[in-house]
Length: 197
Image (tube, rainbow, N blue to C red; front, side):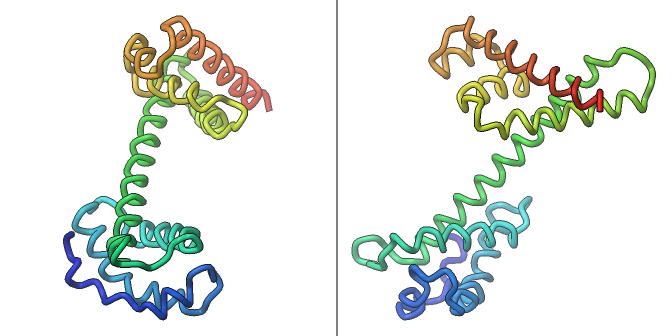
């Protein structure tokens, strides 16, 4: 793994001290010890990301996981590999989030342009902002089936053929159309309420 020679030797005593103890003062030592090699890894493998953001997410995930993890290099491999695995996973997640956000913004722009009814630029901007809020609320709504959200994202945001989306998610083509229609209606209702305020 790139830069692994620069990763410090694992301190077993440090690991023992912080395991299951998220408030330990030695977390700062852990951060200081591994920050530079983690930053170098992110910079070399994921240059478009802010290393500090990814490192913070990694340290948060590590504190949550260490309660269950036991240091056993012979059985589980070296801690540095475990840590860099979390770092890589978090960086990949960040790229996926960025791609999703870009698709959402593109879809909002497209939907706003489609909804353009007159030449009032201020009104168009209000519609666009309301639609952005509505999409955010819809995607954050725990009451909406996650599979339905994914189908909607693929068909509306990703502009993928409905038949391909149906096959990928194991649903009928008619079901894809129903999901698109139902969630589009919800978006329109939310936008109408926001515009009426």
